[in-house]
Image (cartoon, rainbow, N blue to C red; front, top):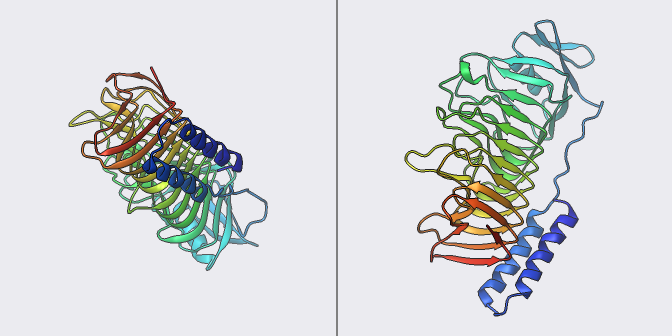
Length: 357
């Protein structure tokens, strides 16, 4: 998060609180918590920059994927095996650079070393899951740390992997960062993540847009902390764009045409359990008749400056939810239910300066 963005959020919180006519020690405590949370979570994880300094170059030559480091070190028609061997070759850390081409993957890649950078030349680097390679991620970091994966495209080859129940990319560990990924054609999950200090920035995650798959854009599991989802476009998922448990900042994203399911129930385009700041997002055009905007479960939430429109509801707390919610300066329009904000008696709600139409 940029420094100016953090300052703007804090100014909004302070000014909104100052305008309240009644001093309330509970809300004052929430205000302090909100400002502390924004400061704590607002570390700007720098986006990776691609350079010509790398340890291994990967490129295509005819049907073969080639790995080069002062000479050819691996080659195969299975791109996954080449990338995995490169990981093993770089025994402790390294920088891998992949040239634009289509790369077919017959298995998954485990990035097992810390301080590892995996850069693609552009989103014209397409890693394509081969037919009948289901129930395994295409690339994952499994409890590693200090890893970057940048500017690659991953195609799940949905039609030829109809039984898949995995994600395309697994960001699992500490200080894992990804910038500019494009994820397409997945049957189940675009991305799953868990750990500490995970950043997903400038990513495009597009589901196939049908009711025949249990799709979700990003799933947070096992209570990851300090998650930063920033400036991403997530659309066309049968279930949520995001379902998150843990803590984090969700900012400057576009979420649309998600939450298509309505049997047995619908749900929010984004749904959370834990402690989250949700700010400056566009959440619009839910995919199904029971698709909502922001769905909240137990936790502490700061919801500021979002534009939420053309959904069943704007912000809703699930039945029996016990939460502290600060909702300020949001624009909530065209709610099919007629209720822009729906939260019960178990929720301590600060509702200030929201435009409801």
